[in-house]
Image (cartoon, rainbow, N blue to C red):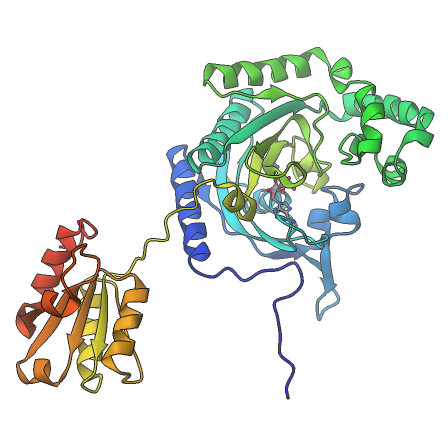
Length: 429
Ligand code: HAM
């Protein structure tokens, strides 16, 4: 017996109706982004390792989670773990006029321990604004993500912080390191390891043992320059002006190293707290130079599509897209011709195969969620007609007596009329 296969660990197939809900979510995001002047960018799914090596040298994403490989020319490549560095690489390569406002969607890859809401292939929706350090761009970006998550029904909570710039952060990091070293015995083993790599990341520990020590740790806000403080205050003011509720969280750090100044996260109050981050982002004014480009400020976010779907309280309706289902017990040729004609007229149509019994085909019609069923038997063929049933009509009459015989040359008109009546196909007449 040949081996049978499952999808790789931590990676799931997305079948209907989830695939449809996901597609709807992407469309809603595209609309929201387009309303604010963002254009789509489609990036490579893998890039040279160096593009992502700088996004978090001290973070797990770079240390442990990269799906990297050598191609046949011995080039070191990586499946993208995120897209901000990819967008910046594209900016440096193409030099579009700024501000450059882009949105993206797609699969990303991190070799993580799979669990609920954490996958090895996951999907992100994101925006980036490159070429401006105006705090109004931070506000626009944060508001866009918030509006989208709110409209999707994820019950979002917004946390914001300022991470300062390289100078203020390095002074803070030194102070923090000194503080944590003074409390090293009380820290969890994981945090003791993290401390060696990046003291800032200890603030992000999820281990309860660390909480009292983190609580008393020095604050980054005490190290910010006046300009940085003004930037952060301006962002907070902008969010208040737009009526967006937020929590200023001085302990918020992000899992990537490139952030400067504004950092934020969207949590869903519908999810367990360990996986409640449905999105996050911030400003990354030094990333372009890290990647060998010119000075170029940037701000953006990414939202996890999979987690957003888990967080949507009301799962979007599982309503079928299908208009018509054809049951043909007279050989199948009529089904083939009618399906083609209806599809050309923009009417979504499915049919049964394999010439099964009428009962079996009507069962499929019912399951398909179609509005209308067409039946073609020998009698219909002889009369150059088709029987039509409104499957979703709520009345107690048996199906047989609700069947109307429609002459073949009036079929398209009749179907369009019936679909309009159900309100489903207003645009298809
Ligand atoms: P991130 O916080 O690493 O940021 O990822 C953003 C979101 O992607 C997370 O909040 C989460 O919803 C989702 N996500 C991340 N990893 C997984 C996973 N293993 N399984 C399921 N969902 C996951 C970034 O990626 C930055 N590039 C965001 C950004 C854009 N910053 C500036 N611009």
